[in-house]
Length: 362
Image (tube, rainbow, N blue to C red; front, side, top):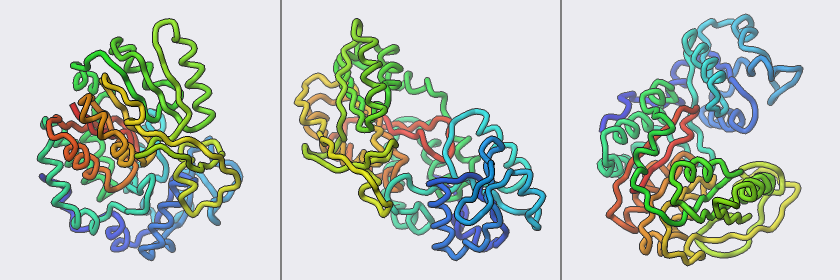
């Protein structure tokens, strides 16, 4: 395995350089990056916060006036300032603007965990290098190995060239999944039914579909989609969280994808509601063909609740691996400990930061 040869991670590099930093973006991502900069004693290097032109307005963020990129270039005294991108996007126009900035000055997209508090820095990588190398050796094709090498290098450095090196066309996964047998499709994190539609349009034998979505606004859209296709597809919609066991749990009642994680964080929650938690094994199904796991950092727990189904049905699985730092090795090791007769693949589709990255077990 040939991961980045850098002797430092992004944060150590910024500490060594000590050049002014302009943050591109506001919100939760910027909060996390500011916190890491503070941990490394680098918060004083933040010279400006800027947003895309349509989002500048007259506002403040964490004590900084939110300005435009052009204003940053005019007002920051050191023309060699560094840009850190603090949000996620796969929109072509946004990625084009990021690439434009990167052509003009040093730009990084720091990898901070979507959930959990473990930062993928040099120390974390070095302490888990044996697991990382073990997972690398498990992949069934060279494309997966190239993807993994570049993905790990990106997480260490924040350098988007590594993400570009491991991009795949979104439809490439259809080649991996071409042998899907007819049977039940379980979509964990179904959102408003986009994944159900995408896969059942391609693989008509995936029927019925069990679509689980905990966020109540998205669930209403999911149910509306299920009703609209009921004449040709049986979509069973469940408003619940996925876990390792059946129980009840409190979640934030605010609109958002991270309702579960918020309750277990230090963020002040004004309103909560109780929701069911179910497991894949609680369905007690025998003919599960395909399971998609994209459950906002709960992938590992969801696998724990699917052990009997995996043993019994040997389903093909697509599992998101970008929510927690440890997911890039822990998920593969966990699945192969249940069944060692899977071929393992990895794909990343165009997005910053390193989201939209999945393992496939076939």
